[in-house]
Amino acid sequence: MTNTIPSPELIARFAAIVGDRNALTDQAEIAPYLVESRGLYTGNTPLVLKPGSVDDVSQILKLASETGAAIVPQGGNTGHVAGQIPRTGAADIVLSLERLNRIRDIDPVGNVIVADAGCILADIRTAAEAHDRLFPLSLGSEGSCRIGGNLSTNAGGTAVLAYGNMRQLCLGLEVVLPTGEIWDGLRRLKKDNTGYDLRDLFIGAEGTLGVITGAVLKLFPKPLGHQVAFAGLKSVADALALFDKASSLCGPALTGFELMPRLGVEFTAKHIAGVRDPLDTAHAWYALIDISTCDSAETAERMMSELLETEISGGLVENAVVAANDAQRKSLWHMRESMSPAQRPEGGSIKHDVSVPVSSIPAFMAQADAAVMAAIPGARICAFGHMGDGNIHYNISQPIGADRQAFLSRWREMNAIVHGIVMNYNGSISAEHGIGQLKRDELAEVRSPIEVDLMQRIKHAFDPAGIMNPDKVLKA
Image (cartoon, rainbow, N blue to C red; front, side, top):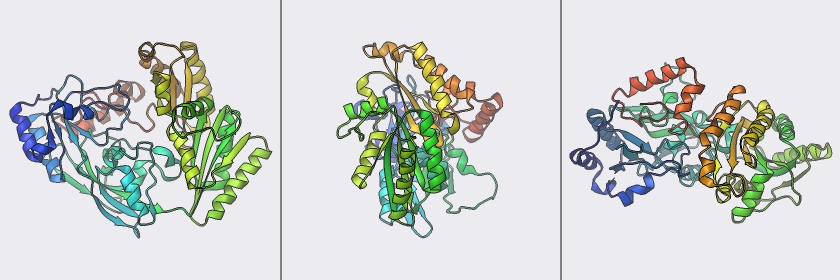
């Protein structure tokens, strides 16, 4: 469906809903809303709208459906697949949720927080801590990403192993439909089997079915014990064996298990201020182990001590260091969270956000490494990620001295190689970043025709006018 190019008169009608100061038309002011974080996509828009209420959003979408104007919802603009970026050469209107940033309620007894979709993730976490509670979603971009975007991409982060992704962390939603109708599904119930679960349709839909404006999120008791260790290992297979040992020993207290290569540690120590190699000798692979316990600090200390002493004496772990305080714990996590930006000074980087069954990680990595090196000799593979849930950020840095643009021009070729191997292991080409524009065409290749058809039917049922984030996830 072809969307309307907004006329000056229509732009004025949209601007009147939010007020002139919240309707940006100057291209210098609009510019930050048009480029995604990696610089791969730059879009066009004649207008950025910043609604201040759910009713504003409702009026905007109603007018858009009546006139055929395309709407692109945007949170903190931290997404990696350009789902939040307007199309190049089109005239999509950006709807920024940044002013919808109110925490509506916190119920520490019921362990829930109700928040506007424009709340910054770090602010949600801080508000929970003020009531001695934990909101466990943790991302490197948590200081700027917004909870509506986290929900729209079903974000995962570093604590999925223990707490799940956003789908598991959300009890209820408030959503404005493309027609302007408002669905109030802000229920605080853990058990509700009254028909279809509409909430799960909007989580992960990347703004293609409606605009999330509010959410009921789960909170958890703050852990009393917290231990973080950094362990050196010989191989990915040894890291998997260590994960199995840690899972058996710690059970649900194992809240994080991150896999990192030597190259990633070198990049972060070289390019990220304040980061250094925590171990005095180099190792081929590393595991960041996070243990959190609710009963006592002593329990976490005992678990970590028993795990490392047993596996060092048995030869599985070559060396390890345990953080002595909160500052050191944050420092170890900072190294892991800085691994992606640390690749930028090394030139072009071709990214993959994939998942495979946890037990298949060593085989997948070996097969992918061989295929990538055969295609691009000298490529520097920096594969790291959430080993505990099978999510690997399989990133490839350009060979030393290579031309950056020539290397990046092989992005789709590398995608085909890596994603083909992922699918051989019944994995996913998007573990937590979403589909957006970047992987839209691939979606039809990795999902069955009936799955794609069902998605198209759902899209048409919710958005018959085709105004919601067109050409994202599915072709318009």
